Length: 457
Image (cartoon, rainbow, N blue to C red; front, side):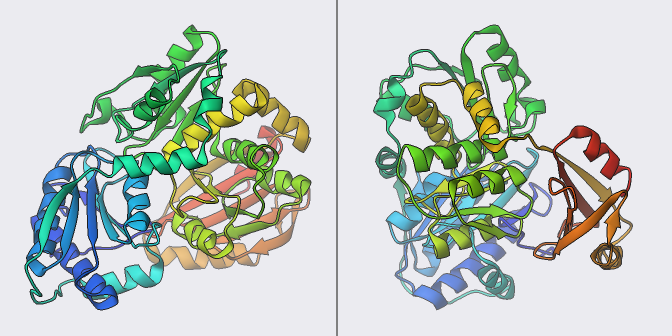
């Protein structure tokens, strides 16, 4: 057994190397022990997998192991997005195992444990799973593996949250759905078809190599979608990552719309058009833009450490209007405390339909509302070893200025976040957690300021 570590979103490793039959068995048995000791042998377990290489094979191995110990397993009858499986964990009062490596390179696979509250496993749960590695339980009874279609109940849930009839009236926008070789194929397009919403598609096949790119819906991987939008007037593009829990949105000008902008636009929409009340949950790495919008709307901001498991935990505690992170994950009140890219795609279309405006116009309205624009960048600094991390963070904790700017506040929620005295700039320095690497985030109201700050680090 090689070393197995549970990160912010499960265990991930390279298929054929660390991700192998032996280690899948070790993780599955650790989960079995946790579920048995926490809920008992009659707790239902549901299992799904994304389009990655061997995900179907390893997930079936895991299902057979659990059934052999006495659990009744519902096993997805097809490729499934993470949010679809997560919703069903709550709906069926089950624990879930999702075989995915999300937006990581194609050679990776992972196992994500989703408890019955339908959000990422919190640190106390992953700590117990880690303690259980190399252990198991005795066979309790005859278990079973039953093929199951998790799609219908999830689609009913989205119909409760989204006004698809309103979206159908979005006549002046050409919707382009980039399947992006991901788990969203057969799900998001099916929702649009069901409600008679016109759309175009591209890259609509499951490919273990994700078309030779990365299953990460960022601009550099969405170039073919961007090219298509620029050639077709009044088009917007929607895409998701490999397991469809993250989103990527391209506006009518062929420009990438950042998750910070999308979450801001949706916060306004959910309050103005849907009448939701509550707070906003965001990570410490998310933009000032969200704080400014919340302030103008009179909405409390709850800030968490980076990672959706922290956002999800806060969502369960505070029941906010929306919770989101800068890397493309969000969920809303009345849904699950897990990021959902299919929901995000739908909400973008719904906001446009309610306002009868293009996405580019909604962006302009957003910046007119806030009164300024923010720019972001991130620099990754490699270190020789993990021992270097702590001294560097300690040095930043004691800093009183960066270049020509005075530090007026320091936040230690996740690494070191330094707020500067122009009241529009901050720097966040946080460790990777899995390798000797510091992630340094910058935000300011001008690109020139960001470059200036980067030169001071």
